[in-house]
Every structure is written in structure tokens, then in C-alpha cells.
Image (cartoon, rainbow, N blue to C red; front, side, top):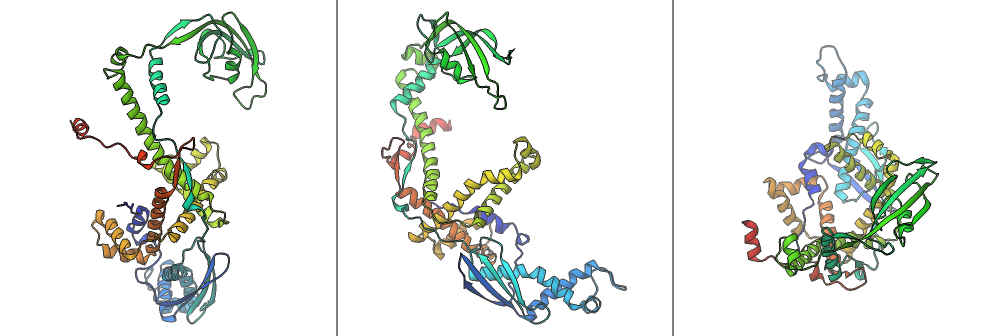
Length: 479
């Protein structure tokens, strides 16, 4: 049976306590209706009765009392009637509107399960002076997008099985560690060791570190500048080459001038690959055992890489299917979330954000610009997964929600019913349902897409599973 990961972000947010949420534990009585507008917007029309709003006005005057001094009363103890007499009732009403409006709006959003993605535009339509408070809130909502073609996706991943040639190359790398150099009377080729005298100048001045004698250069290594390899290939002992090359520092316009004399060409002679080599240079008695261990290690790494690529490349392929215009507000929200995540990680490491930006040569603006492309892709993946979940009927039912809430409550010992009530109160049941649906959609995709290797060959999903561990191997590891 497929396993599901509990969305810990939601759990952490709810468990952080009511101070994280402006919504009171008991929602104020009010009436609200929702109207669908164009351009992914809705209008919430809210009315709060006068008696309920008067509670907010009373709380407002208590806050005002803490800020003023009235003869005969300690700070915060002046009665509302005296404050109204001195400052007027409009002061308390205005303060109550400022403080309570976000709560009323949030309650209406939760009541109608509105999936908002941007701050609302609020217009007070009644109750500024007397009577019930009425206001309209126009807000942008998460759009639905088309991900046509999701059921026929083909995703390329690294082959999870190392080829014989790749295993041979790794063994040859081990042999190179024990190679001996032998002088040859032929032209130099890649992987030869060339003994050279090298002189580099910049503006007629010798370049420190690039002027030396009897230097052992590995041809084909690409060290310093690529022009060195280009000019040394095909040379023999006694040859001299002179050439210019671009300066590694992009701010330097004048090129480097090289003069290189080839003194000797040596090739690496690898030791014979036999059981004696295996015994002397590894923990294995035979080449066969050495090769089998090398294959196991490479395949384990390949399987890990392939499984990671399945998730990442599927997400990228899914995002590419979305041609709908993405709301700018969603992209900005994702950019801000990524910046906040970076800031928190830096703070945890004791690093100052400004110092970090200076060290990497960035500003807040360039950092945001760098995050824009991955943020836009992340938003497209989010919307596309929701679309897949909807089309495939993958949104969890109430029973599944209850199961997950039990899982969430388990580690803390909290009562699941209390946790569910808390989630519902802060409007997170819908977020939980969406997160579970997106997880299910990704699982559905990774189970149904066509996987191909880098050469276009089909990849069997069984190849992505790690080999079963034997009882003997487990016993040895325990010992």
C-alpha cells in the first residue's frame, strides 16, 4: 500500500499556538456571501451585527485606556464611557475596525473555503459610525490550469544500472593510482605525462605560478587554460611551442603569452589486472570479487540518482505542460518564501544576511531575480498537481483526513479531535486536503509515466528498487 507523508508544515503551524493566527478561538457571529468575479477573483460581502461589533469596540477602548492618563484612574482602568466622553465614540470604532477587520475577513475566507493567493482589496460599505459593519473584500484566488498530456509523459532519467564499460573505467581509475610512468619516443596524446619548461608573461611581465622548469603536466587535464592542451597535443621531446591565450581573469583584456619547451613524454603503464593486484590493492582476494563490489557500489549510487531524478524530472516535465498565465502574486509569494527560508537558514548558522549578500556579490533585488525562474516552475508544478489530482479523483475523503490527523497527533499525544477542531478553526483542513492530493498526484505520475534512459531505452521500474539485503549481510553488519 502506498505511504503518505504527513504535511509537517501544517502541523507545525497549528501546534505553534494561537498567537500565530489572528483568528479568535470562537468565531464572531456574522453573515457573509461570496460572488465569483472574472480573472480568478471573488468578492466576499460581510456583515457583522452591531452587538458583536460592540465587543470589538469595547476591546478597542481598553487598548486606548492603556495609552492615556485620566485623573483618578490607573493606566488601563479608565471606563469606556469616560473615554467616549473625552475622545468621542468614533475613536474606539475606528480602532475596532482596524483591529477586527482582518479577523472578520479571515473568518469569511474559512467559512467559504476561499483559496486566496494575494491580499484582499477591502471597501467598508457601512457601519463606520453606527449600525452593523459591512464591507466587501475582493481577492485573487488560486486558478485552475490545464496539464493536458500528463497521462502520456515520458521522463528521462540516468540509467540505474552501470554498464560493463563504466565498471571497467572505475577499475582502471583504481589501476591508475598504481601506474608507473614510462618514457616514450612518440608524439604526446591525452593522458600522457609531459615534462615541460613553461614561461608565461602578461604585458611582458612573468606570471607567478606559470613560469617553471621540469613541470609534469597531464595532457588533457585542462589545467590553467585549454590552449595549453591544444598546443601540446602531437608534440614530441625537443619541440617548442609559443601561443597566446585568454586571461583566466575576465577583467583582464590583454592575453597571456606562453612559451613551452617539451622535454619528455611519458605514458602511464597500468599494472596487470589479476588476482595479485586485487589482493595487494583492495580488500578482495580475486578480481571477480573486486569487480562485483565495484558494480554493487556503482549500482547503489545509480539507483539513488535515478530515483531522485524521477521526482525532479517528472515535476519539470509536468510544469512544461502548463501554458496558462500564472498569477504574478503567486510567483511573488513563492519568491518571498524562498528568501525567508534562506534568511532563516543563515540566521541558524549565525550569519548576517547583509554580510552574506555582500560576500556573494548580490543585492536583495538580484537575489529575488535569481529565485524567479525556479519560483515560477514551483508554482506551475503546484497548480498542475492539483489539476492531475482533480482529474484522477485523488483528493482524499474525510476518512483519509481523519487518518492523517491521527498520525499528526500521535507524536505529541494530542487528542486527534482537538487537533482537527484546531485545524478547522484556522482554515487548514483544506490545505491539508490539497497537500495530500498533490502527494497522491505525484505518486500516480511516478507510477504511470514512461521512464527512459539517456539513450532513449525504456527503463523497467524494478531496476529502481534496491537489491534485497540477505540475512547473512544484515548479521555481519550488526556484529
